[in-house]
Image (cartoon, rainbow, N blue to C red; front, side):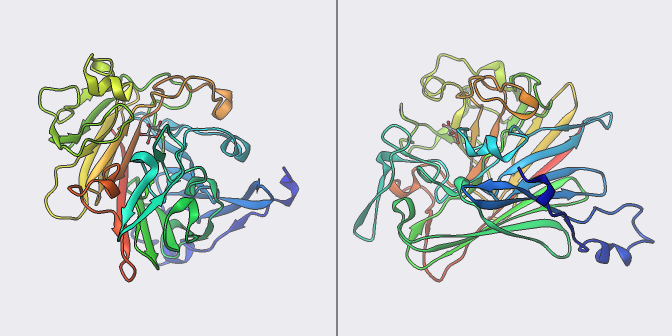
Length: 378
Ligand code: BGC
């Protein structure tokens, strides 16, 4: 790649804000750094580095609005990158299971790759057996987005326009996704979209976490709590039946923290269909604001992750389809179950499930969704 061409634009945002605060805060987050990151089929790609006052560093690039790294401390202050992915753009341009990406227009599955809306049946790409997964053959994860650093904080906003008819979806959709890193070690992810025709929208973030860092093995010893009394059971091809089933007495019960590995190979039908955990939980919530969805603890490093969201559901996916063939950062292999995803979202197949909360965005309305990842130690 033309490293000599790399333009490093250090932005004054943040400095300006910090000047007035010198007396109050000893440290401030650094200005957002914007750098070239290669080309995707001839289109230049940029990467943004967000660093907060505590040295937490998150990088995200314009290809797929992908979060390429998340560097957070363990309980001794040792930093590690807790997101699976690649060192260079090249890896992301090849085959990989949505590492770090924003998925859309519809995150998760739509059964039989079709849905009906206002009397019209829309056919989508069947890219997962008979079903449509994560927006189709070329979802939002495979486009170069526009991006600008945000003023007044350590953040970056990505935008793109999804054309009317893209992957079979109706309506021209204007999308904005922003990442803001706070000094409380939180990443605030906000999604917005508007359309000119009614269309399903379900955006999520597909980062694979391993809180022990790169090359650390599986996530089976991570402890996970999911704030949900119910989940949406699926059939063999992972499409929900429409029932909201209690987790009580099943391997899906994460209301108290449990080792991921404790019941992941249980001989229940749901675990067999998912080849482990690959299901949507119905979050317990009061009101429609931010609600704690899940908490993850990696006991050796002490690193923790808390996920809060305005969404009604979370897909907990334990990387069951990783198989060690993808070589990630530093050349490490990512074996089966070496990363976990907590994809906050509306329920899978909602366009075909009248009893689920609707995912249809109407012209004149704005889709808004927010998720916060809070990194800590214990
Ligand atoms: C899905 C999995 C899929 C994975 C990667 C997850 O969101 O639920 O079934 O294999 O994404 O593609």
